[in-house]
Structures are given as structure tokens and as C-alpha cells.
Image: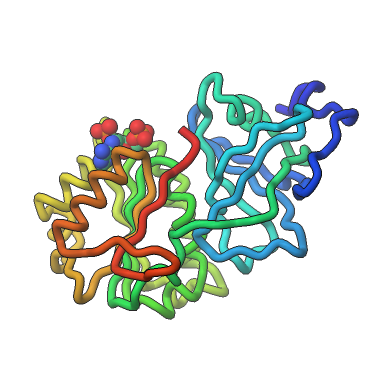
Length: 269
Ligand code: A2P
């Protein structure tokens, strides 16, 4: 598949002050989910876990949307993991990108799902639903994460089993990676589904509050002494997971005021 001619119109100028990068690979997971990688501008720096605004050069004023960078800060390409929203102003077109197409990207990355926004601790929990796994795909490939935390637990909950594949493949690849593989032995993936048969069932919030999550993993319940949290998902998921973490005594932090958990919305929905 490739962009239609309107999207590739060479007459449309690249907006001022943005990077114009080439797509290097595309992989579709389900009819709702895909990943793509683009070239990385040599001057572009970011912290693992941050997001950036991306768009397509398909209009004089392209639509930009916030996307977490799913690749780590040391990678020579940039990876993104996206939902396909039917009729979505950006994703309707973005889902059709092919290798060699151009993606535009604003120059300034930002975000709070960064190691710097958390106080040191023993165990880092990364709670994600759907495409909210993207910033964690970056952080679990960054050796800094394992320098700061002894144990890293990534939870990923989706409606269906096929939606878990991106994270499962990624964790397997990270454990085999020559750069981070050894320290990533500290990484564990916990999957659950809410609408399909799977060994672990249920919303992550329910699994936390009931204590089943801790039993399944064989770890003590979350405590502000030892545990740190990062949350990324829909607005409702953020609200409920934040309230569950507050129930365990954790306190929300930010870049300016690091504390025991941080939150970021999975933007495109
Ligand atoms: P559910 O199937 O019970 O709605 P979505 O694709 O809608 O973003 O959902 C991704 C996952 O997040 C689904 O498994 C969904 O469960 C779950 N989810 C939705 N809302 C919440 C919430 N408020 N708290 C925790 N998990 C949620």
C-alpha cells in the first residue's frame, strides 16, 4: 500500500520548522494497530519515554498529533506504534504510509514518562493499555531504566489477544538484544485481556485492587517505600490507575518535582 497522490503531492511545501523524514519500515498487527519507523534527524535529541508531534505533508497546514516515540534515545531510527481511527484526521492517512514516504515531525520532544521524573526505587511498574505501551517500548530498551531500578514490570492490557503481540515480540527481542539484553533480564511482562480468553483476564485496575496482579507475579503489593509507577492509556484508564496507585500511597510527580509515579495520556484515540 502507498499514499495516494494527494498525500504525496510534491507541490505541497514542507511546513517551516519541521523535520521531513522517510519511512523505513511498516508493520500491521491488526486492522486497528500498526507500527512504523522513520529516519532520525541527526540533530534530534530526546529522552526515552517522551513524545513528539507528527503529521503528513498532505495539506498546506498538515494535521499534527502527539505520538510517543517507541524507540529508545540511542536508536538511529524513530519508531511509532499507532492505532487506526476510522475517519481520524491523521491516522486515516497515516495507516497507508509505505517505505520511502515522508512523515513530518515538529522539532521539540516533551513528556513526563521519563526516568528523571521518578524518585529512585527498587521496582518500576509500567502500566499500559492499548497503544499506551509505546513510551514503555522506548524505556524498556534504554539501559538507564535498568541502572535506576532493580526490577521492571511492564503490564499491558488489551481487549483482544492479537493486540498484545507488539509488546510480546518487543520484550522477547529486548531480552535477546546485545546492548540491553543482559540488564533486561530484570524485565517482566504481564499481559491481560478484557474481552477474549487468555490466562490472565481483567482490567489492570481491578487486578491491582484485588491483589491478583501481585499474586500472579509473586511480588509484594505496591508500596511507596519500594515501588514506582508510570501510567499510559486512555483518559479513563489514567484516572482509575492513578487512583489505584494513590490508594497504595504513591504520589504523582513531574519533571520539576520528581515523586513516586507519573502519568501520560496515550494521545491518538
Ligand atoms: P475494557 O475492554 O473493559 O473496556 P481501549 O482499546 O478502549 O483503549 O481499551 C484498552 C484496554 O483498556 C481494554 O482492555 C479496556 O478494558 C481497558 N480499559 C478501558 N478503560 C479502562 C479503565 N478506566 N481502567 C482500566 N482499564 C481500562
